[in-house]
Length: 305
Image (cartoon, rainbow, N blue to C red; front, side, top):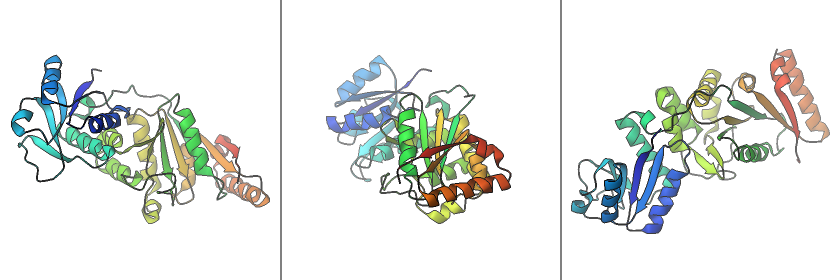
């Protein structure tokens, strides 16, 4: 697939380079990203190849900005009152790079076919869905899940989803940004555009992509199991991800059904008498409730408590 051209033109060279980095590290985007710091340079770039998306600083006069032709034009402005043409869309220049990228993706997918904006992905036959679960608390389960994700991400496209009641925003994860709740809402409303939404929501931890956990525990508890399984299936079918890591706890409704859809279940345990008793009770319950298939998928991972 031929990449679309995105040009970032701003008088602050370091700012433009940093913003370009946010777009370039998003694996879903089929974009050739170019940076320049003058309108003359942008005009030269358009002579070499048509510009599909232009992000240009509001510091350049409107008459100069008109010289650069692009399919979509976004003005990086310091004020919502910045002067702009009707076809130009204002974007707050000093919000996070992820937020700017998300706004651009949203506008572009609303005005055209999302498939033109994203890498085409052959339908994957076997997406690896790894459930991380434990009946034992305080066993460093999430730390293990993130380490596993980072290791696998060296070779595969990996997405980590924290589906715990208290996911730890402000601990493992930053405090701002869209969460699993936003992605889930989007999947309910716009199923065919979920991959476009994901590209604007995911954050990065080294090579690993992830979504922020839900902020409200009651929101997570209210989600029906059919919504969870449908959401995970959409991601597996539509996105570039070859591995999904689901960090799960008992707050999920019908949690064993979610474990059932996993291709493997890593059960975090610690070498401690009470912890071993909880593990035994967990396995007994699976057996009594007819989840022998989940037991067969289980891989015990002994961690330091």
